[in-house]
Image 1: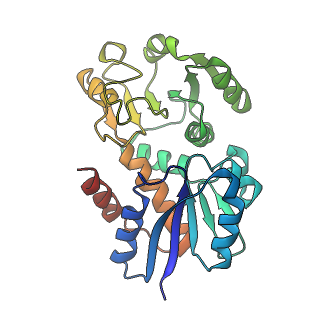
Image 2: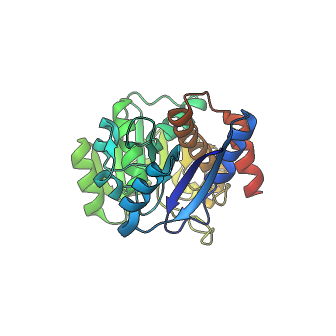
Length: 268
């Protein structure tokens, strides 16, 4: 009998997690299947406890469930700090983890981006930004959080004892920055001509990381290339956060290359 894993969210039909994880399970010859279920916040507790009762192997959680899950799961220290859970494991109760920030850090490390004492501008102050920001600070980066709503940026920055600014200050901040990370949805399908920064604001010494993965080649990344900046697309974070979930659930080394290839094939 196959062990079932799933992603829960609302909406969830756009998720590439089933494609990615089923490719990994097949590659390793595991009798597992990964599905997607639409679940609203009001039924999240029922869904998680029901999955545990049915013998599911584990869950991923996406918008808008990550924060609500803290009320249901036994979260590890990092997920508790971040204030969001994206991975649930049932092997020892109902344990919650957050692999988003770790996925971002591994994408940066793969490109050889050093973070200790680096000037990093992080755009966004939502759930994804929280996970990334905590890991950036842990890595020793000098972080400035920018957001269209300054209060949200200031609130997250205060938790982490880092700087904050309104998004309109981005051009000046990028002059001395070594890394720009976009954790907002700006530039995501269908608004593919939107960007938080244009080429005239960037420089060749900058690394630009956009966590948006649909489209893969966002307007931000195209503008960064025009400026001679290095770029990292959002597929990398998607795959690495998924790979860490896979490791938590199975105890096996995830076939990262196969997971990435499956996602890129689906995105075309």
